[in-house]
Length: 202
Image (tube, rainbow, N blue to C red):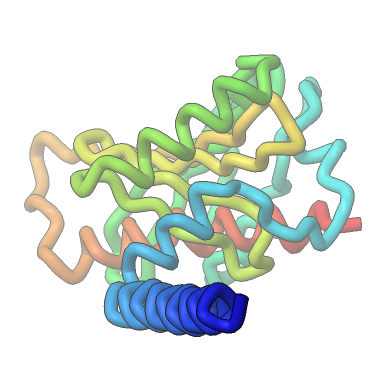
C-alpha cells in the first residue's frame, strides 16, 4: 500500500514537472518569433472599432471628400486640388504637388456587399509577402496596397464594401516622376486613407 502511494506521488511530481517544462517551451517559442505572433493576432481580424463608419462604406452619389477636405488631408492649399469627375460617387481629383507635377487621385466605393470577401482579402494579403497590409492610424481598419497597380483598399470586417484609393500620373510630353516624387504620391494615398477614416469616425 505504501509502495503504491509513493509511486502515485512520484508520478504526480513527474507530471507537474513535465507540464511546467512544456509551458516554458511554448512561451520561449512565442517570444522568439515576434513577427509570427503579430501576424497571428492580425489574422484574427478582431480589431477594436473606434467608431461607426456606416456613411463611409455606404453607397452615395456624392464624393467621399470635397476638394478642400482632400487638400487638408494632403497638407496642400485649396487651389492645388480640383475635382475632375464624379460618377455615382466615384470621384477623381486633379492635385498639383508642391514640386509642380500633377497627379490624379481617385476615391471610390467598391460594391462587394459581402463581409466574407473583405475578410478573405485581408487574409490573403497577410499571407502574401508581395502585398503591403497596414493597420490604419485609428487602429481599426486594414489598409491593403495592390502590389502592381498601387491602389489602396480600406478593409473593415464590419462592412462589406471597401473604399478604393487610386492614383494616376500621365505626362506623355513631360518628364517621368523621380523616386522621391513617386514616394510622395504613394504616401499621399495613405494620408487620404487615414483622413477618410478619421473624418467619418462617429
